[in-house]
Structures are given as structure tokens and as C-alpha cells.
Length: 447
Ligand code: ATP
Ligand code: MG
Image (tube, rainbow, N blue to C red; front, side, top):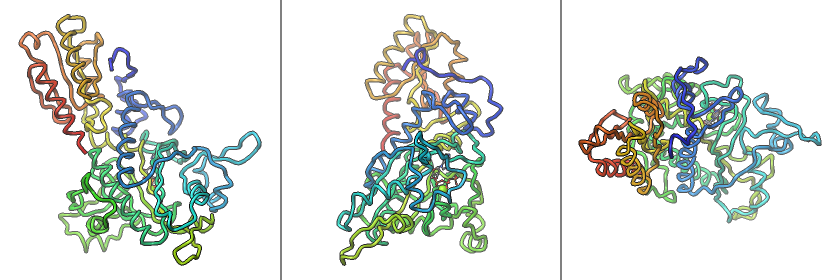
């Protein structure tokens, strides 16, 4: 992609309304634009990050055996009356009337709808287990939308729903999502900590929030430091095997959000040197709630004994759009974003220091073609801006690699590679630079 054709409206000043780094940087780097309180347009650069996050979430859901579908954003109030949640949900629900005066709503979550879909298609325990998911916009009329996409009113969520014949099966589904979540966040470069959590309006009796530690996080959390070093299952994890040992390992250490925190237990279980009392961002939340929806909504299955019973369910959410903010909170410095390769909007920023100089233009064109042919995503700064402005902009948008090409370096047969993560710079021949960047990007993308 040539920057001259791209739409990258970067801001020089930090917008006054943004209180935390991720919100400031998303606005400054031209990733998002607020259209109403808590409602954002995703500009091209931000949209690429959102798609990368979404794709990692999708791949790990698929790996765990969940099946993708797409449910509508607009739902009928009738469905929510069946579960009893239409009144209970309160003001967070955006209620709408259609032209025939029918009560509709913009979905804040999809338990009711998926239960309706399931009951129309499955009757027998023989058809179970099933896990279905979609990645769809939600609307919650939050009292205090803030921190940009971290607490939006309209936000993108991945939500999975599991259906099992009995409690043991439901537990196995829960464990699959538990492991899938550990893997999902790790692939993005985040260390997530599963914590005992409240179930809130979703309901149920087994629940974990996946928390990424960050000073600007909205949740107060308490956990054992050793959780940060536990190994996460690899890409060869067998989701049909018994995953309980993995879950037991993670849940054997103390970790709880404020609502579930027990100070006495914390002090008894965790030595002072290992105690973390910090703030965190909730990037995922998993629930087992059994018959909470299937019983009132009559989603029945026939068991091996020939008797009908409500299907056992769980639901599992990931804050896809919130993750864009959470990632910046984890990866930035004063100059801007520092994207990990798997979620970077482009892998490489190619900086032409003297647009219009024949040798420089040619070397850039050659490097660009070689990178693209190698499957690397390149944003080519082919604008006439001055070098200082180009460098600042590249640092701000935070692509993992910068390939810097100028007439002086070329005379010596050299270009420069700068790594945004640690600032390391290497001067080398153009072909060698391209090879190095290709190799490092590909290594970082290995799952
Ligand atoms: P929170 O406690 O942050 O309000 P929640 O517990 O109400 O979130 P869930 O119903 O568990 O949210 O939704 C699943 C995931 O969706 C959350 O873990 C979070 O990552 C994301 N999410 C929830 N609300 C928002 C929001 N207003 N803006 C962006 N992401 C959100
Ligand atoms: Mg939650």
C-alpha cells in the first residue's frame, strides 16, 4: 500500500478528550474516529488491526471445534420475554420500534437468539456436543462510555455458545474455551490471567474473566505472580483430550477480580513476594450457566434414557474491539504504538527519504516488490514529506519494522532496518535487509 493513496489522518496534538494512552494513540494515529459517544468509525489503519485480532480469535475458535455463523444485530423483544431478560436488562439495552410498532432491540448479547436457533434444529443427545460462535457488533448503552474502544457503546464481540447433554459435557466445552482463550491472547502477544469472576446478568455458577494487567484497566484484580509464567498450550493442543489438568494448573493459583476477592484467602495462599494487587482489562469472559436459558425457552433434548431435559449451555465472549485498545496499553511508548507482528496493521513501513530521487525511488520499488512477493504487508511512505515527519509518523503508527532508504545510504550500498519494539537498528545491503525482515516477520507469525 502506498501512503500517498492511503487514508491516514494522523493528529499532531493529543486530543483533550482522551485520558489513556490507547485512546490518545488510536485517535492520533488515525485508527478511529468518534461518531457519537462510545460509537466509532474504524478508519483504514484501525480496521486492519481489528481484522487481525478477529482472525486470530476465529482461528483459535475453529481449532477448539467451534463453528462460525452470523446472527443479526437486531433482535425481537419477544425472544427476550421468553427468558425473562427483556425487563431485567434495563437501560443498557437499546430498544427500538419498527414501522409496525413491533418492539425490537439492538442485541447486547445473543443467548436468547442462539437458544431459539438451537431448539429449532436439535432434539437428541446424539447430536451433541455443539459449539457455535459469531463475531458481531453489540450495543450496550453504557452509563459511562469511555477510554475509546475499551468501553464503547457499540463494540465488536466474539460470542460462542456451547450445548451439551449433561454437566460433564458442559464442563468439557468450558475447558475447551478456557484453553482457546489462553491461546488466543497469547498469539496476540498478551498474557491473560483467568480469574474467578461474577456472572452478572448472563447468570450461572462457573465463570472466569480473562484479564490483561494494565495500570489503566477498569478492574481491580488480585493474583499470584506465578500465573504470569505458566506455559500456555501450543498449537498442537488436542482439544479432544482431557483438558482438565490445564485448567487445574491455572486455577490452582489465586486469581480473582474485586467482586470475588477474598483477602484472607489471598494472604493465606500467596506469599507476600508473589502477590499482585493491580488493575486489569477484561478481554474475555466465559460462563457455564446450565439450564438458565434452555429451561424457560424449552430447548429440550432427549437423553439416552429417552427422557427430555433442557440442554446444558455456556457462553464465551471476547472483546474484539476492546482488544485493539488493550494491545496498545500493553505495547506503546511516548512516540506511539509498538504493534506485535501478529496484530500489526502492516508488518513493514518502507520509508523513502528522498521521493523523486531516481536511485532512491528505484531501490524502494524493488524492496517493496520483493517484500510483497514474500507475503509481507508493506506501507510505503512515498509522500514528499520531510524525513523527520516521516519518522515521527512511522513511530506513531508503530509498524514492527521500518525499512529506511535514502540516497546517502544507497551510495554506500546500504539501507537501514529499524525495529519498533526495541529501537534496534541494522544497516545492511538492500537484499539482505529484505531477507531479514521477511524472515523475522514469518518467524513472528508462527502459531
Ligand atoms: P464489563 O465488565 O467490562 O462491562 P461485561 O462483563 O459486561 O464487561 P461480557 O458480557 O462479559 O461483558 O462481554 C464479553 C466481553 O465483551 C467482555 O469480556 C469485554 O471484553 C467485552 N465488552 C463488554 N462490554 C464492552 C464495552 N462496553 N466495550 C467494549 N468491549 C466490551
Ligand atoms: Mg464480563
